[in-house]
Amino acid sequence: MSLRSALPALLFILLASCSSTPDAPQPADHPPSPAGTRQAASNRPLLTGSLLGAPAGAEVELALLEVNAHEKPGRLLGDIRLHSQGDELPFRLPFDPELTGQQRVELRGRVIQSGQLIMQLPPRPIMAHANGQSLGRLQLVRTP
Image (cartoon, rainbow, N blue to C red):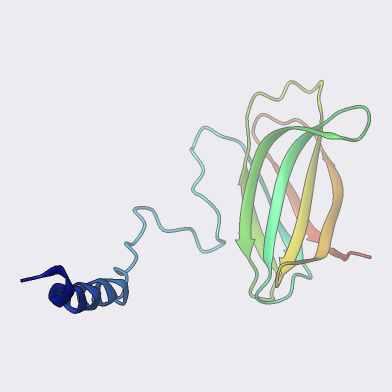
């Protein structure tokens, strides 16, 4: 059999392999909690609270940051991503327990919908507590 006569069969096989459907995604070993947060280790302190005002379908990102004297973010102490259903959005943010009380720490947040930044959580100072802290209900604001 010559190469010229085998070429259509090879092209057919190549196209058939490209058009196959991908395997179904494998389920995660640890599904996310109802609030959409990662499971925190029992020895890590938590910031807890809820966010108000995020529209349905938006992605919310929260970050706990060490902030320097010039208001610039430094070390990331903890972060989470949540998916809003349009209701009050509870969160549980585990963070690095090595806070000394000497650092300036802020919780910052942003809301992204369809690739656009639409809202933010005004920077909120956080007191260093080894056992965590409950922040209550936090209102998101529209970005200019």
